[in-house]
Image (cartoon, rainbow, N blue to C red; front, side, top):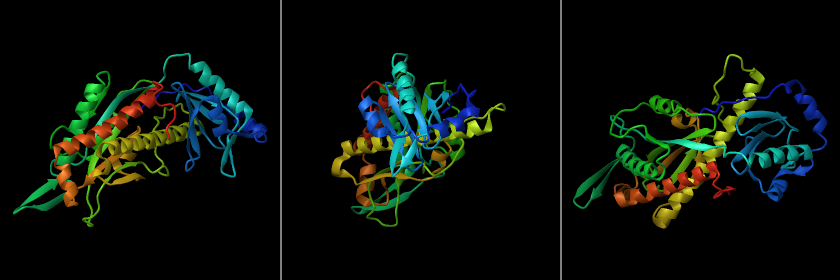
Length: 347
């Protein structure tokens, strides 16, 4: 994702003075106050960062930082939020500033749009991924992960293409070809985006385990503790400010990836019910996820090593259920991101 920023940093020299002057006035519980004001708050306690949203506009912040990022474009000085006894506190000035921006912006044009969704069928060509052979009557059936991934991805592609003719719905591969990991992320990061546009990366895989009883689906996002560069740096960039904004953007991508993961899990569960084991949402530093500069998730459809689940993964009707669940999750996120008021708060 490439979002271009216009920073208002003339007040940078006063930042720490502002923060120190406000240190004794952060007495308002942000979550409670935001609920009263009708704002949605996404808070990640691990990274101590959050996003306040209303009507398509957002303010990104971090505890103990005297800056907020408005609509991923404009940096403003602010009283630093504080965490005390596990509770997030802010000053009245912080609340007033956020309220003014969100309420004034609500009358303007909707800020954000998902422009592209890139589907990445894992493995392919000489790389079969996970493989398994199971008995079938007097014969055997063989299942290759690369084939399952591609079939499910093509089904998902068709659903998204039909639903969003105005968006770029892309595949890293349409056939059984070799495609190195770095080429997959290169495709993702080459998507051209304007200031308020976003792209989503979805990698589709199948699982395997020495324990033949292991089964179920899961969704992975990048471990929030992993640090990466997601923002292009110009020669004239202020290093200190760049690091702050890059961290905010990085954390925003992580939070968006967590939301996508939850919505996809919910979508699949609604389709397959008790047919499959829900293994939940997990975090890991998968190559394609950590190297895609956008919200990114990796989906494990099921275990090819489990005989019962392998048979399901070879069944087109079951794959249609999985792809519909993934589609519904992505569609819910697009609605949330573009703020058609269908989703004002993610639980």
